[in-house]
Image 1 (cartoon, rainbow, N blue to C red):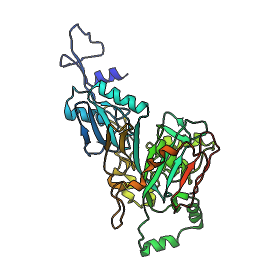
Image 2 (image 1 turned 90 degrees about the vertical axis):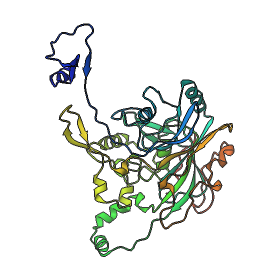
Image 3 (image 1 turned 45 degrees about the vertical axis):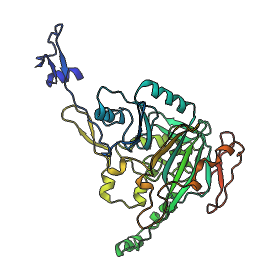
Image 4 (image 1 turned 120 degrees about the vertical axis):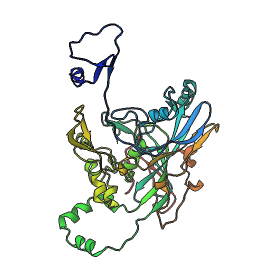
Length: 409
């Protein structure tokens, strides 16, 4: 019994004095205090950026890896509690939109209920345009890519979603901003020897991993026209270009070598749920990007999972600290704008979306890469068509009403 254990440990006091036993009699007016501690995962030390502030609203640039509300093992390490501690503990921050813990970018914090409600109504009525930017595996096609695959939540407990014909309608427009091929580095003698010593089985195994054939990475602008949970992450996975460091949807130990590219009909949901449930507990949740980019073994080991140890004070199961690579994914909410043109808030590109050292590329979004150019002509597009990836084109991938079409990988 938790209360009995707390009393016996001396964590419960009455009027400042330890309770002698669980049978102690409490009198009217006695002040009972219970001292306890919590185990909370660490988050980034990056500050919460202020994009705009007035008497009604604070527009912030949310750091990746910080949850919006206290939930699960997170309490004080949340946007709401951090802002309350920085400004005044009596103040109640009112988030108007929600970003996943791993996602960074534009968020609205109401200073009073009326302001929060007014913006909340605009978001619910879909009169607010949102734009995200993502860093995905491989060379994403040029031109607009429209994904209309329905999305189904297959595990509410794990928050896992997949493309399924019986899911909810979902539509996203994508357009590539930049592509960066891998840097060519001459292999040293040890790497050449290691390649020569690889077995035929290892070569065959790697040949089945389609993600290994996707070289380099792309920066993609994303325009969600619906608001399904993990919509961008799921649609990008389906298109064969998952977010490069996504620990769920870019994890081959969960989804297999194909990473569920073009998969809308398989019946392996239960096995995927079982594998995902082990991530962060008995196994490290590791995206394939860490293999591809050859992160040092130390960094791959330094990841959050259960240690098998218990806290000596409260007997809570202990986790190892997450590595820096686990504190966020390459997905950033870059812009929110009112459709009527009354307001618009935008951040600069995150550091991971800028050109890598030694390469040239855009340091800000460009007019020719704007995915919103198709908004007025979406309805007539009811066929699946895609030209060569080296030419400007329009791809329509799937439809809630039509059999699914898989974009070539």
